[in-house]
Image 1 (spheres, rainbow, N blue to C red):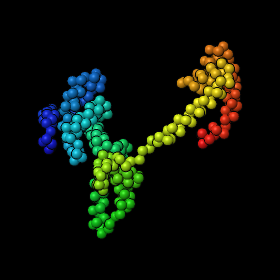
Image 2: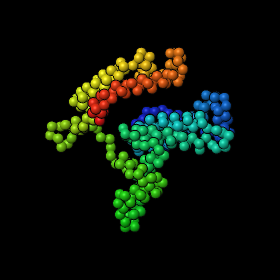
Image 3: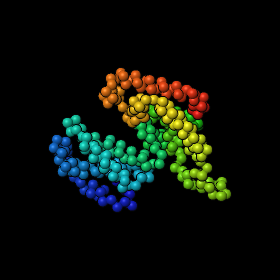
Image 4: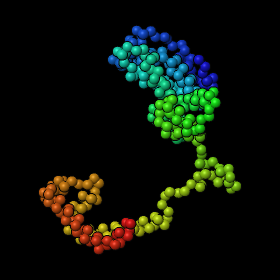
Length: 292
């Protein structure tokens, strides 16, 4: 097994010297951890199979991630496997652990491939790790038969071969084809050396729009205050508690506070809203203009 010589991680050397567990010892350690949370048994079990985790990490070295990080993620996958392993199922720990180790390393690679999330579903993960290999295989087969596949035909065959929707193939092809692009990069066709971020349109509200919106809000607030002033003190209290408080008070709670029945509070609330509507109706044209 070839490891990245640039790494100074002592873990691979220790893993090579770890003991080899037979089936009975492995099962004994698994029971000790599962049933008694014996930490020493857990360490012995995971240390024995750390070489398996490292060998899996090495397979993902071509994706450009630091070898030490890959080994660390593989180790985390191994720990998850040990924590979830059930020795009663009658399978060897290595058979069970390999899935968790691979999944942990794959998740790490995908998270760090790009600043933009590459994918999270099983089909996206399958495409990320298999698409280029399948594509090369299909292109070789087509070339041997004297055929030339256009992009749509190639995407269809990849989707069929891997068993994923064609839309996922198209999306992943775009993600794998381009690298991350910095918005602070200078535009090559710009004599003044402007950055790409300088030509992005600002989606936030402009100054004129903010002033107009503030003016409209002040006017609406004034009209609501005028409508509230036409209510009795009890009605104002109910409207504030029911519509202007967070969280709003319940009819039952207000009834207890005002020594009224729940139904009476509801009637007062409805009456107050009716009075406010009448006041605001005199402003209907202006309200409609502001809200349109």
